Image (cartoon, rainbow, N blue to C red; front, top):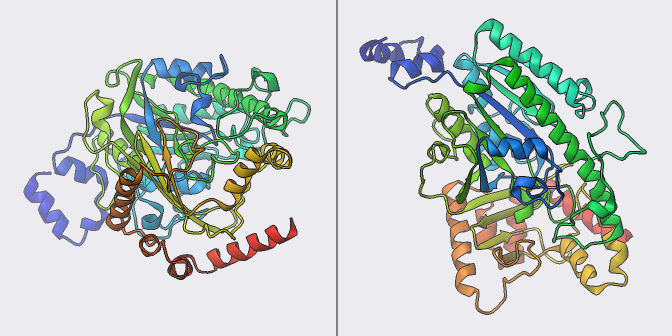
Length: 501
């Protein structure tokens, strides 16, 4: 098809049915015969992975080996530290307020998704695990799909291996490239407990004791915390087992040389001050990429920030397809090729609604030095909680009765502050809120200005709340207008919880 025929086709009544492949060839873009394997962990903290500074020796051997074959990004973040909205960003390339996926929900908007775009280009699309959370449009039907109940509760590496082999064999038989999303349900709760195994789940290749735990700095080192984290480590190890079996299947298929493989976690660990929040530990993710012949083996990018919002356009540019208009992210393909890229010195993250539909909006901007968080719901009365409060939170609450410092941490988690400002270089665990600290005024104002610009440019409906953050009445009015009953119900429910405690 030449340019004249292409323009004529676009002007005809049949233009709307042109495939992405036809358009790609027509405008002269080079289509690469590249497969995509996208592996996600569920609730894996970034610093649990050995190559990302993990302190538990030998915990993630398969992931560490994978890092030696490609590049890992030290400043990589997901956009939302909650399962489904995080994956919604990955699948649409749009912030939640622009895709409509502001919580545990799908989008009904007429917007493109990565799986549909690649299918239109001739790709077979497959998914293992987390199918509902990983499918932005509820009516999308994957070419190949198996969910948790068929995967040993999403926790059996051997079953993942079997289905990987089956899908890759089909791709070979049909002679089609593939987009294969493999989602482990580990290390999401419930964690693996040796004496209380999860039904149908496989035993990890190694289990851990509380004395082997490295306690993150954002929670106190308590026996109950260590116990829960030892269970978490068991599940991390099984995640690594699953990843290893997936890579084995890929290699045995013969596709490994022309497959771009990406690994990341959808958010941080499910304990206080990580998942379902906007801290550094909430959104920082162990993003690694292997692409034989393109990505330098053993490379580490410590300079650039990349984000979940950038996944969709990066994949499309890598395979030579046009990037749809309207995406909020931008491709970081140059970084995969070892080049530099301007405009990657900060990241914006957000939360709107958590599990249950409660509106607990948060907005955050981070760079290498500072992090600023806006919590418009924090008014000294709203009692915050989420569904990530197991043994760790129980141990903190008990210790708070006799330990004032831990008591202050519990109070901070429950009530937060409308504005938080942290020196991430010296306080990566975000323990000391500097929002009113003398000597940091200019830095705080700079970050506030950056967040304001981002909210305005992306059409964030929370902008009026941010601009009226010093007026409780304006804040409440804005939150009700944006979230309606989702905010009112959340506030009422939290007041009852507080009263009953």
